[in-house]
Length: 314
Image 1 (cartoon, rainbow, N blue to C red):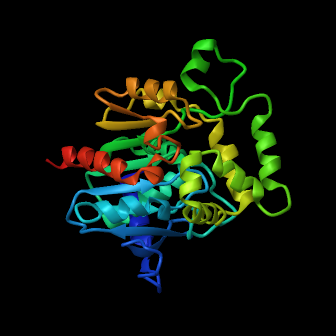
Image 2 (cartoon, rainbow, N blue to C red):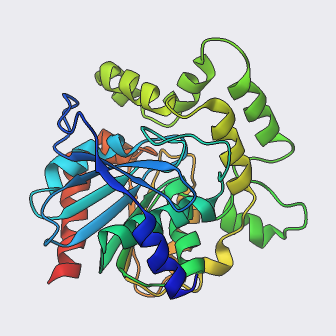
């Protein structure tokens, strides 16, 4: 995007506080909104002193910024944290357009410019990682210093033209119409029980037994995104192959995978091998190593994330 156009977009983005700026949700953050260049109101959480090193956090598909609450509460004393609800997610507006990785990334870029954030650690979990790759395609390393790549695959759907080497690198989650089957189950009329079942499969049994109330809250956060919009986004992002872009990334990166995740350890190992100097952390099942390791074992996750952030601020 040309610089002049980006500056104009930054001026057009409206920043506002939410009326309940300090709600009883247990998150030590300011709830704020901004309006994108195409008129969509985006909600984000902001914690910490803006003079401190900044981390921008992007949640996964149909998740919310609030799901980073343990990281916000623990790290906001030392770092400036901006956790974004992408369009359609969480408390952001859900328009009937713009559900693809590059538009959602443009929204985040506009927020970065509106807040004039620089030397950012860009954190993506699950589909939030796709926004890191899309950012790289659109803007390169501009305003970034480091990356945190938490548990996502370069592509989710199979490609019949792939070699076995391709499949070994990607380990697709959906093949033979599997994404269509998932969509039919998710969109089926009823009580949203499929969403709850699908989410439960991303956590360990130990976590589900020990934290039933938090899991109920997680499902409720997931359901804030309209089911039809969530599938529109999933279809748009699942068939994009990011491997070529990953090979171009050259910023310091922490790549995180987990033995109990639906995203295979071998895939995250491959991602880390493509980024010069990247650090690879594979969480074991007994550590809380599910797709949501930052919720299952926040104390350990935050300690390791803090160490990585400090490396970039020394």
